[in-house]
Amino acid sequence: MEPDTLPPLDSLSGRSQDNSVLFATPTHFSVDYRINPYMVSGVDTDAASDQWHDLVDRYEEIADVTVMDVEAVWNDLKDSGEVAPPSELPDITFCSNHALSLPNGDGFLLAEMATEERRDEPAYFRQWCENREITTETLQSDVTFEGCGDARWHPGRQLLWGGYGPRTDLAAYREIADRFDIPIVPLELTDEAYYHLDVCFSAIDEHTAVVCPDAFTETGREKLDRMFETLITVTPEAAQEHFACNCHSIAGDVVVIEQSNRETITALESRGYDTLCVSTDEFMKAGGSVACMAFPH
Image (cartoon, rainbow, N blue to C red; front, side, top):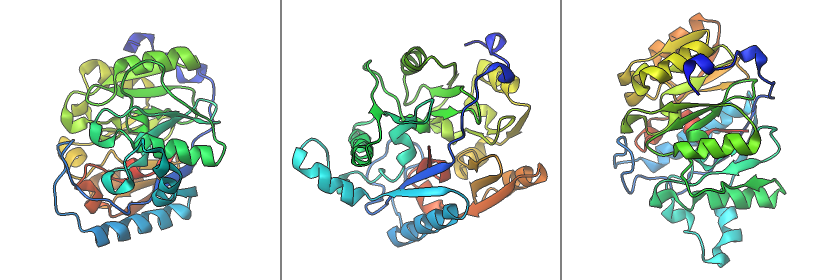
């Protein structure tokens, strides 16, 4: 979809916003391999646990929160012999990558992870859904797709933003568009530093987004300019060192954001948004922050 063919927002069907949030327990969180440029050893697991519990507690003040107990799900999976135990999946707490909520909100499209190290993670989410009689679907084509890490619904509209390149295959969006009859705006990511869309883009509400222009091609920047009235831009340093774009908006009212992003926090608050500032620096050692852990649905 080229910039000059993008539909006006008011011509698109409405969609209920995803104001429920899922978290996955970080029992085995660590950095045991390197699959993105941010991964460094030396995670303080006690501090990480404290940060995760604080994040969940803060979300419970503003959203409907559910927690996937990874060890409990493993009890349902271990006899299958088909998936690795959670002790071998240190990144599973980044559950936004496991799926995408369906257009009508009544189920999920499961991810197909690009890296061998994380390949088994969506099976845990599928089992969690099965235990609750929640519908899950899978891609029919043999392509990679990393869920909400790369695919984000435009707030309040049947429009999907789709990052592609480092992790998700552009062909995944062709199938999603055809199967679910929805418009998708693909955004090519220019560098491994922006390995997921949620590292460089966050839609705050229907008219405002936080973006790092450095992550996108000229065409991608034109698309963003056309579809949002306001773009709060951040520097590559803010995006890469402080995960400024990995923030998450709840109903367009409250933005949860890593606390070190003072400039972005000020920019949001000056535009009337409330911010909920949290510490995620232990998880940033693995390349993730708020939006990676808080799966909207």
